Image (tube, rainbow, N blue to C red; front, side, top):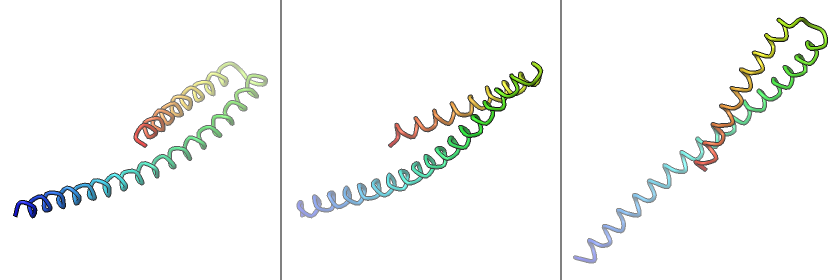
Length: 96
């Protein structure tokens, strides 16, 4: 009977481990999917920012200070958003 209790205990532990592995696998898939989405958004934001920088350079050559200030404000906002995305990616790397 004592051996039966030990086997029951070990069996319960194995089932618990299997449940934990299944949960962590599911969580890993979700985080990897989120990581892919964030990387795609980051790439889009970087392309957009490059376009803004080109526009700013053109405006520096051709426009008034007020127009330039408007685009510089947009550039700052986009840089902040990109920094937030990068921070989120860093968090995901720590989880992996």
